Image 1 (spheres, one colour):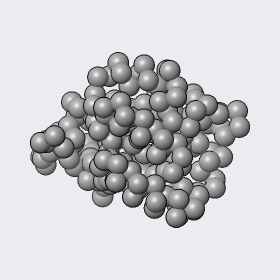
Image 2 (cartoon, rainbow, N blue to C red; image 1 turned 90 degrees about the horizontal axis):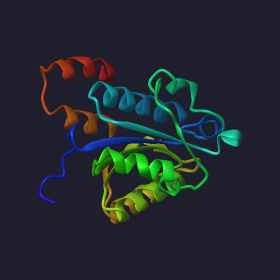
Image 3 (tube, rainbow, N blue to C red; image 1 turned 60 degrees about the vertical axis):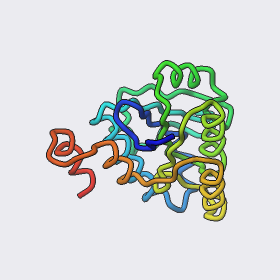
Image 4 (tube, rainbow, N blue to C red; image 1 turned 180 degrees about the vertical axis):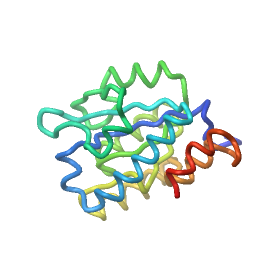
Length: 183
């Protein structure tokens, strides 16, 4: 591929399992939630589609309260499989969007995020992992998962880098809307 850049026309954001009971166990909870919140808000301002998954809601609870406003109006796709691609509802939704570049954030990096990334890449999608918007309970698990994903072809990025790549330039109405998220 000659052009790896994200655009508002080729990208979709997938927010994986950022749920109350899971996030309660995350040492980087505040940092990951702040980053995910910025990414979701920016994607919505830029009209990049956003898909949200939730794992076993009965046991792990709803999406974190910190993301309630950013995800308002989005219907979480429930799943039992660790990979989001194990959900027929998710695979239908991602296919219907027809976008090949998938930005991932969520938890846990080494379980649901990693398995989703591998399945998406096997399905001919390009995966962009927002490294500051993912986390695992144990640092080593997250670090190894990010390295493994890079080794297998995922693009490792950050929230701010991905958003500015989507924006392309300053001075636009979209830039002015998104800028307050990063001040």
